[in-house]
Length: 429
Ligand SMILES: NC(=O)C1=CN([C@@H]2O[C@H](COP(=O)(O)OP(=O)(O)OC[C@H]3O[C@@H](n4cnc5c(N)ncnc54)[C@H](OP(=O)(O)O)[C@@H]3O)[C@@H](O)[C@H]2O)C=CC1
Ligand SMILES: O=C(O)CCC(=O)C(=O)O
Image 1 (cartoon, rainbow, N blue to C red):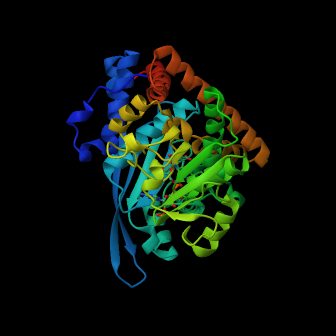
Image 2: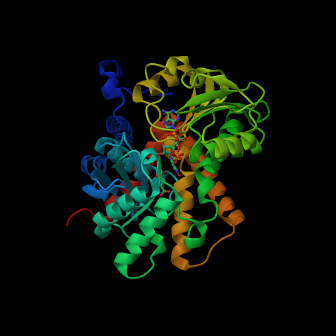
Image 3: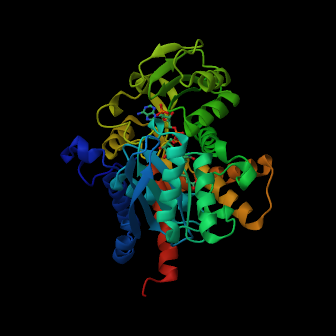
């Protein structure tokens, strides 16, 4: 497997190593060089097309006024409307949103759906805000971005800290401004107002499909395949549930506030019910308590980071004992960790492939909204499965034919597709 050589990992401080924008850019540069990408197109695709910063005044429940900073970065619209989630978190930064927007461009191209890439974020702590405060903030954020959004312009979706309710508020605010209901302006909505069946589980479902493909490719059986998942939110809990239903043995769950381990397998349906009633995975009787950091380095066949960026770094990559790393989160692995994992022979299913099930079903939602005709869950899932399988095959084909690791192969496949369209459209105003 090829390793990254630029920038030299040994010269990076931990702060540089964990900057998501730099991580994205380093991989882009490496893949573009391998493709011998035209220098002009390289410049066009390296940076986001548009970066919007808004300051959002919100009346808080106690009568005070708070001003939140929000971003929407549109990296590319070459292949279609910009597409990507909105994140509510205290850790949001412009560099993070830039990286996430670029990853959306590459992700949509890997699965070959007609979208560009975007991402939004608001610096806030949604856990400390009431529903009323969240609704007012979401509506004002949407209003500030109104001319930049639209079914043909930029279509948001949920990400960390946002959910179907957030999407419903965005859809309603946008529709009020347009004086008509426009369901296709966001995806990940509740099913009764234009959401797609299967979207809630889609990212986890896509992960389960690429895990199946990786086992098949590596000649490993599902039986006895031990899985550890970090994050038990939308992505992690659905990935764990679907893998458990397929016969995988989920032995560990690491959450923000604790960890669980059971060598014989955790009953994910029971854990989901426990979390629903207790509001945490802690206190679950069907597993022993484990350290949430140490869980990532326990022996397993598949490790699925499904929480946030930079959880596998130069500090812990050498200690990983998984055969497959399936990236449910965006950007969980740093470039230095990439090299360490390559040397260890870990089979990485990169984020822009592994977690693309969410945006793929978002595409289906956008299509269904625009035609006003809705598919059954079985139809949605069957279409999702076939796109994920084909995308896995495409990435492996690039990896084998170019002699690069899976991550660089996914970038090369994506950049090739976006560059082709960019050239075809022309860039001379
Ligand atoms: N939602 C989607 O469709 C898609 C999401 N993704 C990516 O998947 C990741 C997770 O998103 P999603 O599931 O939607 O987000 P959620 O907010 O639903 O869930 C995130 C989960 O991760 C936990 N968590 C956060 N930080 C840590 C940490 N450092 N260690 C352990 N657990 C942690 C959170 O715990 P707590 O609640 O206690 O904070 C929460 O349970 C993100 O990287 C996102 O960008 C990618 C593709 C699509
Ligand atoms: O469903 C979407 O449009 C985007 C989901 C997302 O934010 C992601 O894939 O990271």
